[in-house]
Length: 605
Image 1 (cartoon, rainbow, N blue to C red):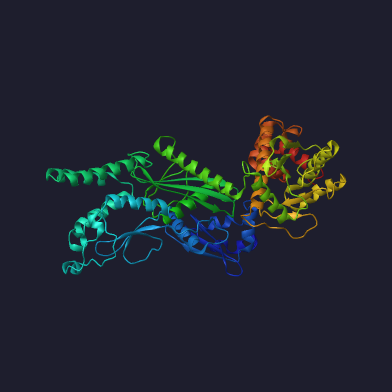
Image 2 (cartoon, rainbow, N blue to C red):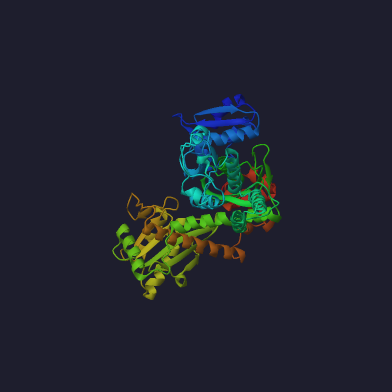
């Protein structure tokens, strides 16, 4: 749908809050969104100055728009989450979490059994959870059974069957793990009290359980039943030890949900801490994929709704690192500056950082400290997968870096026997290239590197990785041919996003198995050159080595240059602005200086 076509229907879109749905020509649902004013929100997608590349791709595919009106923004928030979860439209944030979580079920039956299940059935039973770790829930369930006597048998304990004496107590009764409801030795009311204790323990609320046990211990002691009183005393001690091992934040806090977010390009990571009675009872981190350059507050707002629904949270307060838009009514949003809530938020942020690092570690392969045989096995696998003539014991990787479309530099890292050789790392300030030209930059640095090795008579690598795909690989090969080194080493290009490997002259790429040792090693090499390049670039900027290209324009000072960069985000974007847009920011005189610098042929006539 073009902006012109949209203008013909814009006046028909209501101004009310609601949900909008975009469909393509094949009537496939592309996107679901919420809005305080449907007309204003939908119109923004067709505003040329607003539209990013990804949004442009979405708008081009829109064939039909549907609306659902609701009474409030909160209703729109809830409906949007429900529709995204049901239909999972391609352009919406994708929650990459397909796990099924365990519940603790209290079965609807006389003297209910309690057990773990991943299937939630509408049979009237009560379900606690879900829980993020089945191992921890089993451990907690075992702890509960040591302190609260609940039956584990599958007998049909109806009142009639018990009255008829159909059952006899089993070994569990004699071991003290069951109170014998099958022979009528325990009333339904007493069993219900034990279930209430179980629920309190599952929610981290140990004090009512300990208080009841203390009362029972005193009663047994007054009745001269000292052995039974001693057993209860040991249970109290056991519970207090468990409480001391629990992650207790503050006894003054009640029910809270704590969320933190870490966004890395199109991927976001969100950590969740469920706090009940001052104790962290659940912790979980999820990964989300964004498609329309959503801001962190939009992503976190979406994640809060999805996670709270998944884990049946009833907390009326959420602790987050920044203000969130459009959460359901009645939920208090807290952005703490200090105190226990701030400590909780910092703990959540620590968890989300750890989660991201764990994902990165799993995707890469670190051969540091491995035996020579293990290293050789990985390199042999890489040689086989890439059909290399020699074992790649010496690998080099190049990557270009720039800042806001200016100040290009390059970095090179070296791996020997599968392990980084930091003493051989090199960085390059680009000398012969004006402006941003990744191909020319790659050609220059590759030429400088291997001309030097050739002049010094040093050994060449068996494998050279060019981070950037076909174009930069072609530029690097030009230098290799000019140096007369064709066939002396293998050069491959690595596409940044898809992890595809390109060879010179091949039209099709090579994709290594996702979890193969070969690809993990290549990822580690690529991540290392990124880290080294970014660190070098940051150090150069902090030392003031780079001069802003805008400051080099006669009549333009640092303050004006900074204002332009703050407004337009990069030198490239400034270069593409017209006179009117520049004038609105820095005035007509300075705008003319900037415009004429980048567009010397445009006289405005």
